[in-house]
Length: 109
Length: 112
Image 1 (tube, one colour):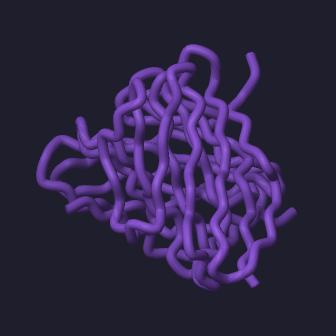
Image 2 (tube, chains in turn green, yellow):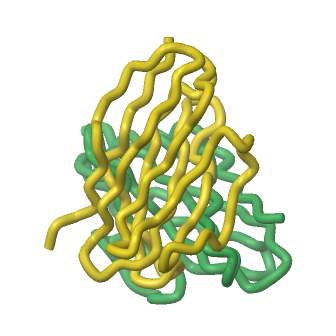
């Protein structure tokens, strides 16, 4: 079974502070992991995926297979980062995304 | 290029009715998935189609069905609507499935 846990429903930080959104997963095989973001009144959009090992909008995420985690980090939060963030897992060839419940990030001025 | 287009944007239906939602994927994308989003359950996978074949199905009752056409456009149908079917229904497309999906804006279904 695939499961994704985002332990924080809400996260509030000040502008310029570091931010870390936590994601833990459960999957017996080799997962593909993603972070999706939904800004206010916009559609869900892909932020980054672990396979690309990229940095988007200053965000990075490292897959830790030992801790089964895929935490999203940014060293200096900006007000425009305020959004709902979803961690998602795809289990190889089952062609489905399992989402966490999401974390609402608020960056205060 | 055009994104994933879902129609209609909003729907109000009565209990017991049926409804059909439509999704046009990004040109060239052959995989189309559907998700239900509710405040309580979050985002839940409904089904995924590739080249007109359903490759996976989520844990939803048989009242929820879908299909994909030869041009990759997809429809989902919900029969005998229940109040609990009120949700935002999202469609997502991908070239072949996996490696990240592009989502549409969704169809908000309200069952009264």
